Image 1: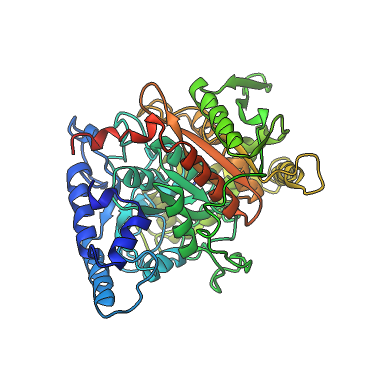
Image 2 (image 1 turned 45 degrees about the horizontal axis):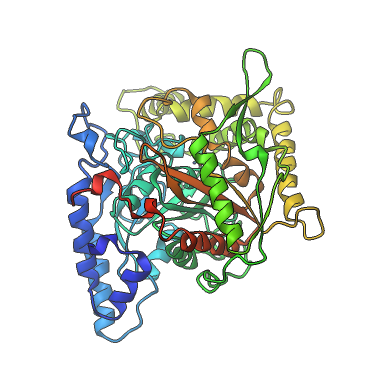
Length: 530
Ligand code: GLN
């Protein structure tokens, strides 16, 4: 076992005890990057070669110099007898949607191809304070618009370490691919409709979308400001708790970052599930969508293997003393995606106005006579297909004559979605749940090009994750098994506001219950033979 394959908590403990240095841990990670990364994403990648198809391509920018300086600083602190942070010496990566001072911060878009951030996002600053060592900025769908990471302007796009012919999911696909392949123990991602949980499920790692406001959004390049949640991607639940400890909490620079006290998320991890009430909802065991030809609501079953994985997880948790509550109604789940289509587009159309070629980022080189022409050309050249589509739709559904019909209505449906969660967690209600157990995704990872280009189909990869963003509640996704094709099967736990601790505790209990399962011993394809 290489140092880069240890969990964050094991590695941090070894470093604190001086059995391993932070620099050695970094060397191990850099060696792994050398072995599996292939080419970092770039704007002028040219054709994708057969060799490229075997590699992971998680990064846009590697930050070896920063990493060395941070690792050396940790080792010096330890040598001087100072107490290093709880993540001292742990290598991590950052989705390229976070501003990190002095680094290229692209959001996966050509429009930011020359943008060096002048400041650092709060979650990244907090990882630094905890002693973690940043090895690079990782690839993502452009402006986080997607569920496969294929829409990045920086190619080759990341690939799934379990099977590089499959996508890693998205939009935090660089984060989850990096963590699964041993390129950093932790990655910071963001989740607006599922972008941490869905790729975590595809890559067999742990992804945590905290409650809205639990982690500051300061320094994040915004997508949907009422939905965006930064959070950690890790290889196990304990590491997710450690990472959340580091990044959660109020921030005077983000007025939506809440002042609710932050517990020590590791304190209750091993408390078990005895007496907890965990729900299963039939509304999370089918895909529901509107047929655009007929306007009717249609249904499709989810993957059998995923369904069985969730049922088996429920059995394990029940054996450990949880009370499984079946047939929990979540009737507005089916409106999650259409509602998201409207709300996220309105918010992103507004947020993307700032990219105009004036203050930073790409500006057209075509000579122009007036300002409007400069804006128009800059944005036409700089944005890819997804942001363009989304801006158009957002402008349309919020326009004065349509707002009532679409945007105002979507906001009402959003509160109905929230009311589903209020009802199941109500301590005096019929269900009194501590958490809801669902599939994270309807299918395992899909192939490159299989869904890409079909925006509607692509979005249905998020049907089970998106309602948590509407409602603001936390969600944890974790591996629940392997398919017969050796692809990870994802589980999701949804919880009450600010109760990440219970989700982590249930997740940890599931890890203990499945410690000896055959699939736990399996490794991603790209790591075999290393
Ligand atoms: N896949 C969704 C989208 O394309 C969610 C993305 C996200 O969570 N950032 O909008």
